[in-house]
Every structure is written in structure tokens, then in C-alpha cells.
Length: 397
Image (tube, rainbow, N blue to C red):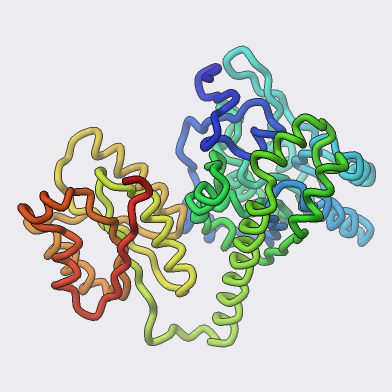
């Protein structure tokens, strides 16, 4: 059901975020593209970033963040709570007693008031450390930046250390995997490169059985009706087990990358995996790009997305703009090439870029159409040399 423009109320299964399902009544839609790019953020960062990563709401990320803040205060550090979501949890609320909080500011939008983080107020106080809950949060239009992670980069640019929280299902490259596993696609996501910017990522872990028991006891969502709905819809043992494995793998990948860079002493390896994803408006481009990004992450390689230009109309330009934003969020680059023959164009580009792995979608044509007109996939397989090819099956047939 649609509410005011830019706000989605009570989304149907398959589209809502977990927080919307059991916590927030509305989920804002960003009306502007993020202003920070990966390169600009890296150049601007002048303070440490620490992330508490969890597999699901309720594992204790916010509690861990506030506990770290209190320890810093005891050591004489100037700490402020820039934003926090307690969801009415008594133990989390108790943690706020020893911390200074910058009150949220009210933002009016379409006749309604929303509370958003007072970014300007935090910058004015200029603490040594800012505690920022829910890194993937989407700001209400009119609040300033489109996403909370952009506010965090503003703090890092100002020399303010940030301690923040995020759930694994909100990491952009895992969006389609989480949707497949849980049946719920996350609306609020954070680019992978933002997580990769962190100086430290700490996993806040809890077994599925323990988390479900916490929910049954009302320690996660005091409203028992919402807790019961969450247990049925998202917090099943199967879902939580899969999400926990994703979180463990995400942290392990980051540790591997850190160790590799430390042990290599700054030397660039002689060989590096380069993953090329082929996209077209007619196929499941976003899912292909996310799949390619995960392949590149596991191989500690580069992600490149390529589109062979077919037309230059308004719809194609809009599609390319969305694909470019997603590719950048995942730490890759988009290239649009012109070629009389799509297969020759893609393979020629791949060889020039020293591509080692190619990701393409299963043919959309019927078997008869492939026999009559030929198949892009089959031609690529026949012509490609020294390139591993991943053919991604369609979700529906």
C-alpha cells in the first residue's frame, strides 16, 4: 500500500526489510543518488571506522556499540551517541544512561514528522567518537544526505571516529542471496566498499536457537505480536542459520584480504583475477552483477561490468544509470562498448582487460529461437580461450 510519495507502508512479502516488518511502520525511499563515491570517500577519510556486523536484528550489535562507547568514556574519550535504535529493549535503553546523546532532529515530509540523525549537530560538537546505529538506514527526503552511511563519511572526513552497526542482509552484494534464502528482499542496503573501508569489522554472533529464545522472551521486540510475526516470517531456524553463515564468510573474506595485503608488503601479485559480467536490459542484470561481485570478492579480484550498446534511448540511459550505481556500490566499473557483433565485442574487450572469469546469464530465447538465430552463450563458449565462464540460470522458467 502506498502512502505519501517516497514512503512505502506495509510492504508485501518479498519486498520489505526486517526492520519494517517488526519495527518501523514506514520505510523511506531515497529521492536522490548518493553524493559520495568510493574514490572520494577514501581520499576524505581521516579517522577510523569500526563496524559491528550481525547476522540479524537482535544479536546484540547496538548493545556492543554502546558498550564500546562506555569503555571509551571511562578512558576519558569524548563520545556522543549520534543515532540509536533501541526498539524498546530495556537493557539497551539502560546503556544510554552513561552516554551523551545528540538529540535527533524532526524532519517534515508530506505533512508528517520523522526523526533523523542531527548530522550538523554532531559535526558542531566535534566529538572524538560518534556512535551511529543502523548504517544502511535511508534518510527521509529533506534530511540532507540520501543515506546514513553518507553522513558517516562526513564524520570521517571531519576527523571523527565512527563506531557503527549493520546486518549482513543489508550488504549490497548479498541482497539477492538473502532474498532467495528468506523470501524478503532488503530495501535498505549499504555499498560493499563502505564496509571494506572499515579499519575493523567485528562479528556479533549468536546461535539461531539462542536468538529465537531471546525473541520468545520478549528481549528483542517487547511487542509480543510483532515478535511472533517475526519468528514466523523471518527469524526461522533455517533463515538464521543461512544468514549466520553469510556473516561468518563475509568477515572471513575481509580477514583474508587484510592478511594478504599485510603479508605481501605492498607488492602487487603478478596474477589477479578479473571478473567480467555481461548485462543487457532484457536480462536479470542486477542479480548477475551481484553474483559477479561475490565471485570477485572470493577471488580477491576486480569486477568489471560490460554492456554492448544496442540503442541510445531514454529508457536505456535510465537503465544504464541504475546499473552504474549498483556496480560502483559493489566496487566495480561499468564499461559500455560498441560492436557490430556482440560476442566479438565482449571477447575482444575481455582479452584487452586480461579478464579471467566471465559471468553471463542463461539464454532468454527458446530452444527453437536458438537453433534459428544462434545463441550468444553458445558462441561465447566456443570462441573463448583461457577464460572461465559462469552461466547463471534464470530464477523462473
